[in-house]
Length: 251
Ligand code: NAD
Image 1 (cartoon, helix red, strand yellow):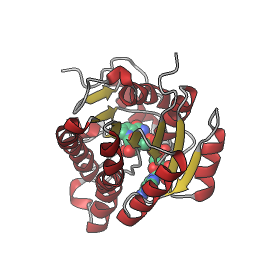
Image 2 (image 1 turned 60 degrees about the vertical axis):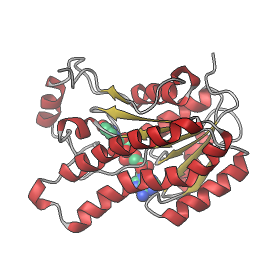
Image 3 (image 1 turned 30 degrees about the vertical axis):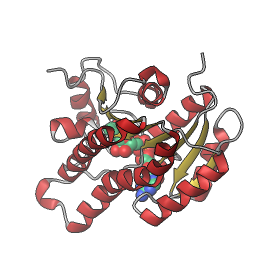
């Protein structure tokens, strides 16, 4: 059964070949959606869109920290795709800094891509979603938001991802009367380029010890949850945060 037949989706930060956004784009396309890949590099974004099964996928350059760019790309994509049903705010960066080492530029970089970008891209699409009385927004938070520090992100990353949880819930409340849903995913330790090559064997072993399922997550594990939240399977789910972490936050 195809869950997104006739739907269109925008996914930010989806060009990274082993990333969560690209895996989500693949799964959405397999389920019949037309997908717009947004990212910073024009060639990488185009390559990612070309990889997707099915017809009609597109790619655009968009720095989500730039409000005017988000508005321009939203207008362009509404025009190109006819309508947009789903937004996945996936673009994110992290930095492994300790509290006292966070300089103003570190704060700005991490808060801007993760939190400001989620706000700006959502704001750019909300008038369109509202006008159609439907839509699903999925925001990528992190286990780091819930436990105060993840595997790799510093406190400013935790703060940005916790901010995303608040924003997700506030958006859900405000948009529910318009038929637009907003949910967040909190991935745990997922093997992607965001941490690739940056963990020592010892760090990796320590992380795995804290995961009851005993393995790192895969990008597909997160994509599956995105599909659920994007599709009508989750028609009565809004304002929620879904853990995809192999049980590492059971308490
Ligand atoms: P990734 O580094 O593979 O992909 C992130 C993508 O975002 C890249 O393609 C990058 O070019 C893009 N990007 C960065 N800044 C951008 C900007 N300003 N505008 C548009 N795009 C931008 O990382 P990933 O592991 O696939 O992470 C995806 C999301 O999941 C991020 O929000 C990350 O914080 C979150 N997350 C990842 C993990 C994990 O373990 N991998 C865990 C929890 C949360």
